[in-house]
Figure 1: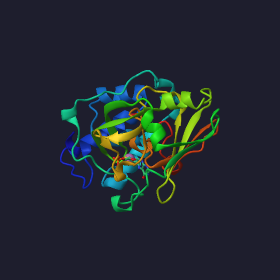
Figure 2: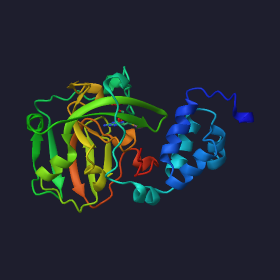
Figure 3: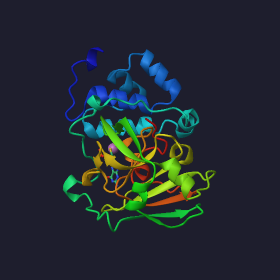
Length: 261
Ligand SMILES: Nc1nc2c(c(=O)[nH]1)N[C@H]1C(S)=C(S)[C@@H](COP(=O)(O)O)O[C@H]1N2
Ligand SMILES: [Mo]
């Protein structure tokens, strides 16, 4: 402790930073880090990053996140469930986050909206919101973890992505599902097929039992509780099943593709 004990960093919640960094570590590193006390001091030693503000905290997380994609992917068990919570544990108000302010969130007309499905699927076509509302719905209360240093518990309801992939006849041997969004810069993100098929990965239409609010991705966001927040695209307009790694908005800026939580 000593020299780090009274460290106050503006804009950084130290406990959350240590927690998020821990989650990003490959198993062995994580075990060693935890048994060593899991402190901010140990984290600075491990990464060589000296955290003094929120941007260096972010740099530290990127550093941890680059540790070893492949090791992490091998450790990720597609059958492991993310922890679930009770209604009373839901974070209220639930935070908004994007690379722009909430006022600039796209206002999508749900009646005109369509999800376009392309790539390695039998049914290359569009689906309306009505189509999705008729499909089986599943509710989950899980924790959303953002690499920027915050986390929150929320309730989402929607169509299991696995159900949808089966419905469109997706090639399950394909490597990725790649999503494109309707916001200013056309946010994109891809998830690997085991994650897409994970029983808790869903095409969320509701938040907290009500129609998805505009800021949270109306009419549809992909909710992936086993991945970090940036791998949960909002305002989704297309999905491509592909063997090509197409990256994504944050993935292209150095965050790792695996980003499990
Ligand atoms: N289209 C789009 N999806 C996005 C983002 C974005 O900027 N654009 N930001 C991501 C990040 S970094 C986070 S933490 C979550 C925040 O979701 P929330 O506003 O529902 O909390 O959305 C993710 N999905
Ligand atoms: Mo995030």
